[in-house]
Each structure stands twice: as structure tokens, then as C-alpha cells.
Length: 304
Image (cartoon, one colour):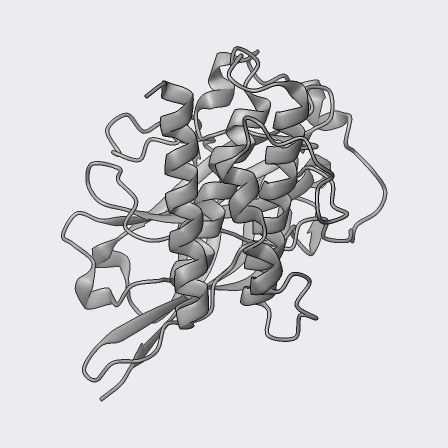
């Protein structure tokens, strides 16, 4: 079997897994599966050195990614007017299966997702080094701006007797050029000591406002694992990302992390480090000597 057929089979399996979870009401798992598959499809669409798929097929893959994002957004938001029903999404299974020969009209009126290039952490390091004037291009007088991205924050897990859940409110981040960041948002992940994901990765919506040296988020993030089940040496990472119009991609500007012994109720202020994000925490370089930090507030929920 060729590599491309293996890839398509993997996508099929992932799609089936997501729709199964969805039909069983296991929404957190379904969202996770949909988002992983959407990212894989987008990566294929954006790949310039892949000749496995024609431009037309890539367009179709991009539209499938859009549908997966729409379904996962409607599962995350209880008020959502369910943009895409599960039975409609299931119609895409045969398209994925026959992607190499599919030449019909796409069943839904959607556009492919990757209008902007989202790079994996550290990937932008292969591009030009960040230039100071890049940020200046985004300097605007508007202090409040509308969120373009809905974010991918997940609901709190169900409580379990004797177990603790953690909610982290991201209050604000201090940056010397805060007012010049375009569409800033945070990516939150929980990693083990080897940098491997323990939970689904979550993105906040775009920040609510910017002022002086602060970008304000005021958003709650529900950590998707009971505190007691987090392994020793794990850490919660916060990556600050922003859009760079000159280069047309979203870049990680800096990151911060919180270790297990720092989990306690109340406010906490943590240091910012230079990119690329070092999930293994081996070569850390502070972003600045100035007193600029990430401001968080933790709430612990224990079901006695």
C-alpha cells in the first residue's frame, strides 16, 4: 500500500473515532479528535513539497477541515445554533475515503480553513528572525478589537469524589510592545517532563483589549485532567501568539509555564521566556529583564 493510501486510511480512522465519540455524547473526546484531524488536513493543504494531492483535492481537504472545526465549535458552545449536525458531518466519510478520485461538488458551502498559516511551536524559527518593525506594522489607535478566532476552550470536566479540578483565569500579560500585537491569543497545553501532551491543547479567543504594556484576556481555562492525575514533573504551558501581516502567519512571541508545586488557589505571576517554546524546560532564556509577567488566578474545585 502506498504512503498516500496509508495517510488517507489514518484520516478515515480518526474521522470515524471522532464521529463515534460524538454519537456517544463523549464531547471532550470528539472535539479533541476533530481538532487533531483538522490540523493534520490543514498541514497537508499547506505543504508545498507534497505532490500526493492535486490542488483541487487539497481544496476539498481544506473544506473538510473547516467542517470539523465548525462541528467542534458547535459542541463547545451550548448556545451555538449547531452550525453542522452530526448526520451532515458523517456525509464527509465517503469523501475522505475516496479523496484520490473524488470529483463531485462539495456538499456544503464552506471555504477552506487555512487562510492564515498557523505554525507549530518553534517552526517559525526556520523563517526570518523576528524583526522589531513587524509589530509596528500593527500599531493602531483602537484599544478594543473584535475577536476573529472563537478559540478552542473546553468545558470543565465532570467532578469526581475526592478529586480536584483546576480553573486558571488568564488575566493579562505584560509586554513592552503590547499595543502593537495583532490578534493576540494564548495556547494552553499540559505536558509531561518529556514535552508530551497530556491533555487536548486549547486556544483562547483573541484578547479583549490592549493598553500600555498589557494585553488583557480575562478568560477562564479549564485544565482537562484532575490535579491528582497529573504526573510528577508535568507543567502547564502558556504560549502567547500574534499575527504578523508582513509574513502572513501566526507566530509565537514568548511563553510561560507553571509547575505542579505552583498549583494553589489565588493569584500567581509567572516569568516570560523567549521562543521557541521549550517544552522540556532545558534551555530557558528570560524574555526581558523588565518586570513584565503573565498574570494568572487559580481556582481549585474539590468534590468531597
